Amino acid sequence: MTTQDLLAALRWSAPPEPVDWTQVEPAVGRTYPAEFKEIADALSAGSFQTFLTLLHPARFGGPEAYAEEVHGYADLLRDDAEERGFPYPIYPDAGGVLPFAVIGFDWVIGWLTADDDPDRWPIILCDSHLGSWHVYPMSTSEFLRAVVTLPATIKPIGYVAEAVQPPSFVGATGSSAPMPTTPDPDYWAGPAGCRPMIGPADAVEELRGLVEPVPVPSLEWRFGPSRLGMGTPADYRHLIDELGNVRVGPVTVTAPGGRPDFLDRYDALRLQVLGLRANGEGPPGTIWPEPRGAVKWAELDGGGSVCWLFTSANPDQWAVLVLGADLKFSVTYPMTASRFLLELATHPDMATSWGGTR
Image (cartoon, rainbow, N blue to C red; front, side, top):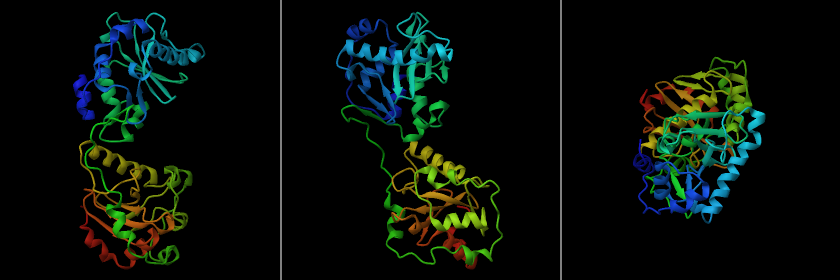
């Protein structure tokens, strides 16, 4: 893995801004790995995936200020090192952990510098309070590429790769690589939002006599839609409380803590879309947490999804989207989840238009 592989993953083509390493290295008192110098020369100051910030000499107003910043993050680790039983020395001690990147105030990324050859230094990822640490025998470019690409192989910070795909780097001055064509938040919601909702808004009582309830033994509403930072439609709460993981034709409702579980199935769709976006592909509309993205609340036989659409600021007015397994086929219904299920229970032939298992 080389610096060029990392830059290719970022689609970075801006002119390099070389650092004067003859000034920086003496100020820090260390010779830096060649790959880090290549990365810093190519990318300038900035952040990967919003979260991961490179400790870049150009960010801090000169070599001495940069060295002070590196000292500062080293001291952050030192504060808890003895109490936590941290087994490695910390910069500026000989062979100590030398920070080169941070993720907010949560993680410090550095090198273990015991080897005389900087290009052989392994990476160490440290919780900022040394609650945990992880060593990776990887080069700097290899590690950074693993952090920003899918599948997320640096598990403690897998959320960095999942934050946005394809991978991004935004310079401190706002420079960034061009992104592929972005999905349209109104692709699905726009047409549905133009149609009035079909009532009743809560059809659970009408549905009750048409289906077999599947109670959820360990219902956990705290692991429901609110966990994703959104409201919960009142009819969905009523549906889950009364009928659980109910099945209607080819549709099985997900429930917080149920089988299938709401968050598990939402997350599976989210990761599927992230993987496609990483290759410049994916559905034309958005999937949560993309802007106004659809949120999965039921499974469709054959791998498809039944989702809510953000057609209103009021969750009780969210329409329904049926999405095929290939994420290409879609059809919208201006009705709530329970009303959609009632329609399916009383008119099962509506499912034939979905093409079965696309």
